Amino acid sequence: MAEITLKSLAHSYKATPSQPSDYALKKIDHVWKQGGAYALLGPSGCGKTTLLNIISGLVTPSEGAVLFDGRDVTRLPTEKRNIAQVFQFPVIYDTMTVAQNLAFPLKNRGMARPDIDRRVSEIAALLDLDKDLNKRARGLTADAKQKISLGRGLVRPDVAAVLFDEPLTVIDPALKWELRSKLKALHRQLDITMIYVTHDQTEALTFADTVVVMHDGAVVQMGSPAELFEKPAHTFVGYFIGSPGMNLIKATVEGRSARAGAVTIPLERAYRGLPAGDVEVGIRPEHALLAEPGQGLPVSVRRIDDLGARRMARVDLGGTPIIITAPDGLELAGSEAGMIFDARNIHVYAGGVRVEGEAA
Ligand SMILES: Nc1ncnc2c1ncn2[C@@H]1O[C@H](COP(=O)(O)OP(=O)(O)OP(=O)(O)O)[C@@H](O)[C@H]1O
Image 1: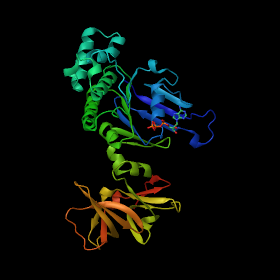
Image 2: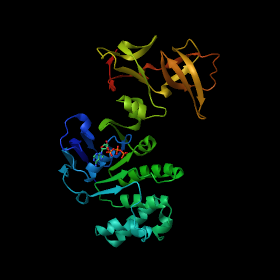
Image 3: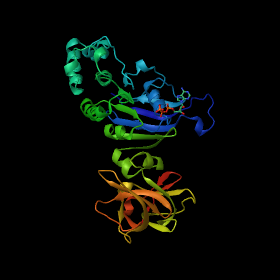
Image 4: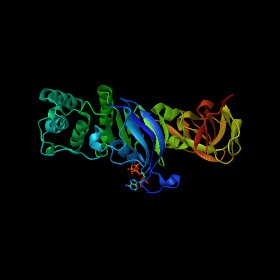
């Protein structure tokens, strides 16, 4: 079990990097707490695997250091780092039984037989593999095989960390939900630092206490699922987290108001000296409600989509198309409508980065 410190860490696959775009991982400084459940979330190519491979020892970073509990492991090979890894596809022994597969990492480390048996039963029960313990892995479904892989990753009680690289890719969609919740429960019981790489926001938000959002080689925000939703630090986080993502409206912001086309949006805090031309205000679809004309800001409705559990309206606000929530029962006579919201839920971004503003 370990606290993992990333110290001025950066990586370029190029021999002589000269500009920011040469870095697959831009400089980061973070401490990941012992026992934490972290998800590395971001689109393909943003640098998640590079960071995971640096932590596991498969890649040596071109700059900075990785410390496990204060010990510099930057140049140690994977096998000397005391970590467990679970990959996208099952890594198991087909000819062994489920029990033998789960016992293998413990046997390798010389654990006593009674302790092995106890631990194997415990992990098998947590993953619902207890009925299959004596079956050979070969005959099992792809889902069951990946559960064995998860079990092999989680079985050693003494690991510094367990690293998961998109572990639910091969799992049947119906089972994914169950396994995600199971992994979360396992984390609570086992007190092991876990790092989970995914491009799927639902997986990240269900599993992790802290989600590390990556974009273009940089960590743009590290926070709880609620923080990422309520206060996105970067327009990318606002857009990437949530479905649909945050609306971003180009605006001119001065003091406590933002001007977008002919509309003035009231703000909760005051802003001064923001760069012209690169300012946006963000509001989540869940935080803005369609209303009768005359209420709040004027919008014109393009379309209302009934999504079953909720209705979303596509509207035009000061020339920008945005998506907001249409309350049940609201029927409008024409396309003219209002939009109501709480100014506390509107965020201001300059160059993509959230500006805190001053208390008014
Ligand atoms: N071995 C390598 N040599 C050169 N460039 C690489 C290498 N591995 C990754 N890259 C580049 O580094 C960047 C980050 O890749 P990385 O695989 O870390 O991203 P990722 O977020 O894990 O993406 P994915 O989800 O597709 O695996 C990409 O531009 C990729 O092309």
